[in-house]
Amino acid sequence: MNALRKDWNEIKTNDSWAIFKIMSEFVEGYERMAKIGPCISIFGSARTKDENKYYQLSVEIGEKLAKSGYGIITGGGPGIMEAGNKGAHQAGGKSVGLNIDLPFEQFHNKYVDRGSLLNFDYFFVRKVIFVKYSQGFVVLPGGFGTMDELFEAITLIQTKKITKRPVVLVGRDYWTGLVEWVQKVMLEKENNIHPEDMRFLTIVDTADEAVKYIEDFYKTHDLSPNF
Image (cartoon, rainbow, N blue to C red):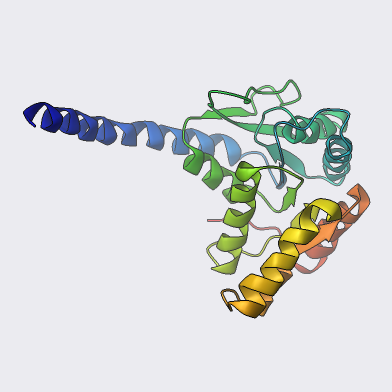
């Protein structure tokens, strides 16, 4: 029991020191991202191969958004993230990567601008930076991490912790089932969300539709930072 208590006390001490690492990630993220201007975050799977149609769509969306004056923020890794950065890079736009240290899958891609790659140990710090410096969210097919990022953004908009932002789901075949479940079960059956919450999302199939939705949104809303 004494040994267990000693190990537990060491864990608590390490937890206290971790606060400084967390603080340093926030400080570096805030200082570097504050200078980048309006950006759109692109979320999606790290496992998507470059021959996949969604990889090609992400490239096209990144390119078109960059040509419209937006920087592109991704997780900085392979797959959909690489594609979004590639599109921004090809268009000469700002290409930002918020990389996370993982035991598998994640490594930064070559299309992130030099000086615009940030590395994180903590998912929650990384998500704060994603949301704080994004003027909108484009979500392509992905796994649990993509779902986490999507619902984090929606929750913060729903609860008015951030100002309203466009959230675009790309790929009707992929997203329609999920959105229908939210509509029929969350909303209509269980009454766990408000009907207005469904307006936070739109589903599209093409890069032109995605970009148009974001551009139309900012015809009636001011670009403004999140706090």
